[in-house]
Length: 239
Image (tube, rainbow, N blue to C red; front, side):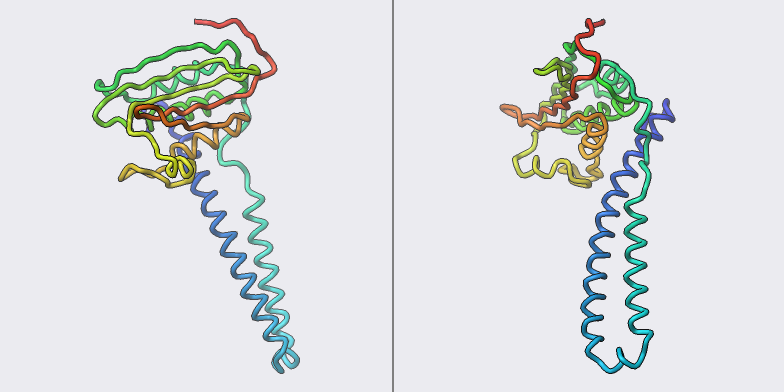
């Protein structure tokens, strides 16, 4: 957590809460579906019995179960976002990166290389972009406990897209791990929650961006977050 920036802490907590609540909603929907199927089977079997004909409460109770399940599912669907999606503006990726570097502790055993090559601006929320970058930096640092090389650069891609690229010299991820990398609670590091890349993907999607993972040779991981061209493109690069 960033002790110097309460706003950053609140946004990180909101992002984690959103991931956890999404997992819980998915789990609850599956459970509701199982209950509805079981209720339907029991109702069909009960309709064949004398009790169904003689006790009107049987049908009323099954209708009650169905209504309550429908209400519960509606509550799951009609939830508001847990963190702000407004207050977006045109900004350079390097602004979010520089803010994130101010929130992350980089060990002296890790050498950092930076390069700012993007020319266009992206439409994003500044705090979201900083948190996204922070998650990437922390993941990279954690992948190199004995030290290594951390590379961070922004670049201009084809079609006006802007790209944030973070690389490390850690062990990387095998193909099977890459397939599950964005799943909540997926981690190869003992004692870690495994929410970093999941949060990165969610924050990227809010800006219409997407995340790519690439294994580096001979080892290491490259994470690219590709942002679509904003309305204002070709803005001259700054310092």
